[in-house]
Length: 539
Ligand SMILES: Cc1cc2nc3c(=O)[nH]c(=O)nc-3n(C[C@H](O)[C@H](O)[C@H](O)COP(=O)(O)OP(=O)(O)OC[C@H]3O[C@@H](n4cnc5c(N)ncnc54)[C@H](O)[C@@H]3O)c2cc1C
Image (cartoon, rainbow, N blue to C red; front, side, top):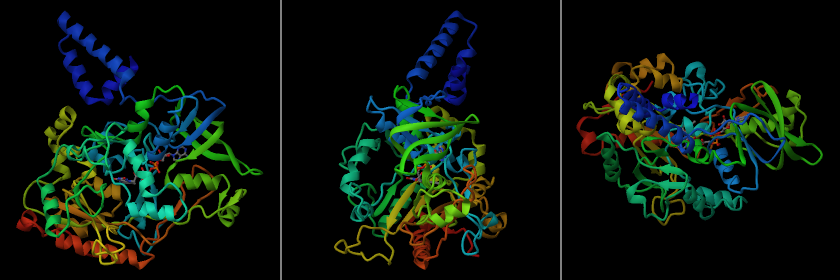
């Protein structure tokens, strides 16, 4: 009964059904219908592919495989390994379950403010992140079943074929585009009608890829403007990435389809899969003589457990935590580990080569029509909430506030013609959203991003609350390299993160090209021409 009630509270549509049923208790017929509803809920709860995975509290001493982290990577790995009935798998996740807010596509930035974010920040630096609180950029990572796929913007983008081929050329056999494409297809359940017959998409996989069911009138204008600039409107997952498109997103019927929803909830009844939530791995146990990992140590409910793996341990704890665990376990740069008193098992450059696709999120373009996403307007309009709850439709279904994306090449790419070697290998992505920081009237967006009040007031103060759209240029292949180090040998201490943005000035040049590009773009096409004006000031 507790579980049924919990599910009613978690699922507003069921809550409505429950209330409707409860108000008609005065007739036997109504009592019967309430009973039917409850039975439906119980049955649904047992079979529902959306039902949350069970939490294992009693562990075997040994599993065939141990997977650390139930994020985008770990969820898929646990799913595929347990397809083999004879293999037992333990999946350990530091966070708990997703919730109703994280399901709402437009609330992605808010989801990052909940307690399901590891809350990492870069170390202060004079050369970048200067408009951020404490000169530190926020680097959100999900600490929850589904990992960062629960707080991200849900944009379904595959890597460029050229990048995969380069990985293979570097000696990573099996990572070329031709080899990875079948796995994208195997995972996918495409729900975009015009792509149903494309050889680059497929149906029946676990991961739903759909478009938002609702759009602002600005969205078609974004595509039109792209065409006026000579780009094609095309599916970025197809033959070429270059061009403009509506956002394809990992959403299922208007709600977020996280990795956990896609790959774990659907298989939660497999007997060979044990999932432990709020289980924090603190060390990978490695035999120092054979250099072989044989188990993990983790903490759950304040108890320390040790579990062994017969075959393999898969470290899928995310970009920072995987590296942190390796170093805590003795795999990392000798000098750094010795400084912290960690016995070195293997001297490796773990924590180096950190890359982030730095972007410019402050470019706002004012419009005269009241059609964009303004925080106050969204919060005060009850019909938007009801439309989402009842129909899974309306503005709340826009994934992370993004309606369109474009992949373009700046002048730094040697490939302006299709016959050029680097043609089709864009160095810049542009994300278009029917809202901007001008609409951040309540302040959650700037809080999430970590922008100081002073900078916000200086840049957007005079136009705060005005309708605007945003164009965000993002560099795709940064040349600057950051570094991650351990703060201490305590596994519960957050690592030290050094972004080193713009250390290689090429990155700055590409981003400036992006700013120039969107400034031209913003005035293209009939719709934008009629009333766009710049809604930000350069400091
Ligand atoms: C703000 C933001 C927006 C993004 N938007 C997009 C987008 O629109 N489209 C896109 O394709 N990508 C996007 N990304 C990137 C994408 O979400 C990540 O690349 C992807 O989710 C990473 O997957 P992962 O499995 O490597 O790590 P994660 O998904 O982060 O999973 C790691 C998991 O390991 C768990 N874990 C960590 N340490 C431990 C431990 N010691 N013990 C047990 N468990 C542990 C974590 O809690 C987490 O659940 C975005 C990222 C961010 C931060």
